[in-house]
Image (cartoon, rainbow, N blue to C red):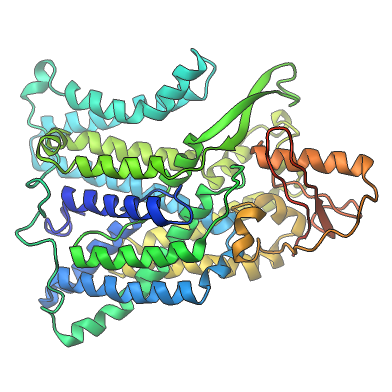
Length: 534
């Protein structure tokens, strides 16, 4: 973004945007677990607007400010009219496609950073590529260690949580060892402490623009609002996913209102518009999970133990702390340290984020399942319950086509319209896919992004009908125990939870689905909901 906007947005602008989002959402948001910052899609949006507007002689910052102000109004209209109720139709299908797209953007940005190294000599480019690959391998290895049974659990957790930043620090110094010291590597460009990158003030003179350009900003603001409506809410849904047993309710409408506020303020300050980050938002929630040891009943690991999520430490401190620490990096001494980071290390960091996002993506998991030997795949895998293997291939192919269309448009001057492609995935899933796939297949291939508890404020998940439980104590014994086991798995985040469906006639995907409720000794609350799949 720095290079493609002619130094309009530099390190300080990105840092300040991250601070703005972190402070506002950690202090007053309904869901402070969502990490807010500058995302890959907004980077594409910013430099695409630059390519369209600057040849016309329009002031870029003033135009972006009006985009932010118009978008503020649109966000507030959506929030006041409860437009987030439409999130009830958002399932894993569009979320996985969008997550796959974000991962591809990270990987692409890493490659673009490396291609700029050829402006220097060949030695610099070669070393930058090697450093980027080493950063990727070491940081990824830290994640592997974190999920292995090597060393003590606390050490593994430390390596998993802090392996990536420690890798960046190590390789920033590593390039100064031996003969590498003589290689002129490109580093991150910086400006003065707490000053914009270009020669301007922090407050944008939004009145220095033609009246026609003020109204020309409206369609751009509409596209930005569509992008943020989907991107931020998907980040929020993933941070409150079914694998996280959260106790505190969501507040999508209020958070969208706040997002409009930060968008308008960012426009006035001349900084990138911040919104929810993928995959950082769900990673933040995952880092706050408290686990416990249980016996493993899986057919492959009987007699062993494993750790499952017991609860999540829901608080505002961690998000606020990282925001304030980010503000500290805008000081002179720390900016000098940031200036020491080679761009090759930054490219490696982009690769790490892209690979991590791909690794946890539903599309990737389905592709891995299809690549496995069917005879050696455990029967406990939910995808094994699908009789038609071709249905899995067809579903994955549709997801890849959706990703390909979205990614392809961002490589053209029409990239400004990519939010529309993303939004169209929702009606495609709601009204088209049920005609092509059986309900039982969609129950496994797709599913709700967040739990019924999280989605309660927007009317519940698509296809689920919430009713009062008037059945009393009928049929308590055997049925209750079975359903409690399923609900417990869902709340603990165990594999396959949320994919299984129990029905009155014993058939999958039809009839009423009964979920029991209790408050166990650990204090975990489960809801009593008869649910119906549409």
